[in-house]
Length: 311
Image (cartoon, rainbow, N blue to C red):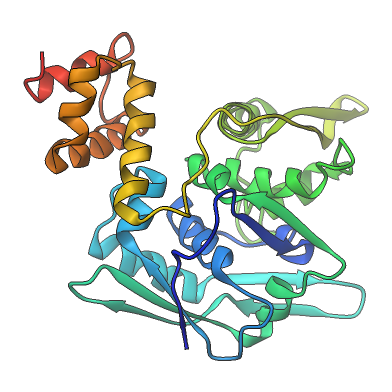
């Protein structure tokens, strides 16, 4: 049995058991995007052994990031070896997410099978779950922003998270080895703020349905814990149009990118949207802009037009 990743309505929500949200695991932003796509198509009624299909072109359209064969193989290989560590009062479960991953050459399709022991945490939604919008997590480029968004979503109806010790928080983000065998990352609080907390807060506040701020709490003269304040807001980005065919969805997202770049002249917009090559170049340009591979602080739209001879 295969489940396609294209049958969802707009404003798709991922619902993820809180044991997973707060579990300790290490993933790149690329791996997380594959996982979020997988979570979006899981169903409570799915049988053991269900195969889930993820289409690479749709991932590119949704994320604005360019994927290639080698990167996909590395990401799915890492996902097979990455481990969730889920602990309660009675048990410690060490489990991988994927039982198998199959890449179909020439078709841009990945077929994923989840590990059965993790299934109940992903699809048992009766009592304890977190919901968050798929377009929000796709719009975050920082892996720490993606993780903090997940955690904050768990507390959005309350308005603030519990107080985490810094050790507990860093373990959840895989910045600290709980066994103490590896050195901590971002030991200085200023580095943690600059490279993790501020980046995450800025991205979440700009791109998602949540608005967060954090508070670092001292014990004596040093910071010992952290808490997040969480409010909902109307997200600025357009919803991902899951109800549309793939080509129509791509055009709608391309329109959004043109609007972001300030390209509003009707003739130019129509010329770009009517030419498949220019639409593809637009997505590549937005990815390079997002990852600082293109520098255009003042007029990125003008730069795009100039590169492609449109001005």
